[in-house]
Amino acid sequence: MGWKTLKENFGIEHIVKVENDQVLIGSPYIGDLGVIDVTTGRLSLKDGWERGLEDYTALRNASPAEILAFLQAPDHFNGKTRVYIVSDAKVYEDYCEKEGYPNVTYSGRLMYQNTTFLDLKEAQTYALKSLEYRVKSWEERKKTLLRDIEELNAEIGAAKAAQDELSVQIKKHGS
Image (cartoon, rainbow, N blue to C red; front, top):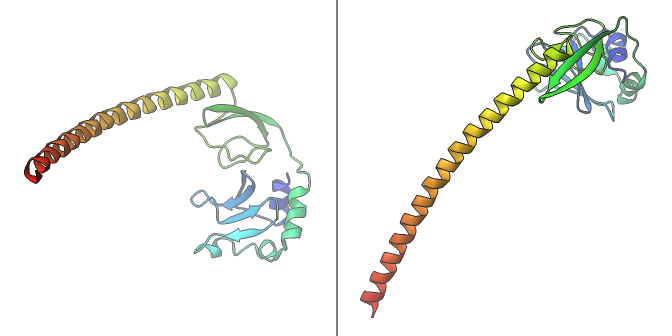
């Protein structure tokens, strides 16, 4: 994918990253000032933040076909450092020109300081800790839900008992 080619050709100094089927152009604070659909080449600007990319007149005036042509062009990189990125408790291997935030990998992933590693074992250890935390959180949530279910069952039981009692009273007085 030509995210780097796009960035270089339009002189984009903001962070350019790839997420799902989109190229996002943004800052460390607002990561989606501009969003490009990689299937159509259509650029959308974030509502209320259109001025955030006002310096990129050529990009803003480019047709979707022009943008798509850059995205479909091959990227060329200078330097090759292997990195491991932890995302959703999985470890992904990738390469980059320069490691660390706010740099981006060859595939367009933004490298955050706490989820990008140069060492595979460190990445795996981080992923394992992430999974341990996830298991603990879900176990705590399960306990809370089971307690809530017990309370609901007690409320349902009390309502049914009151319903039965009232039904008996209605039958006594109705006969």
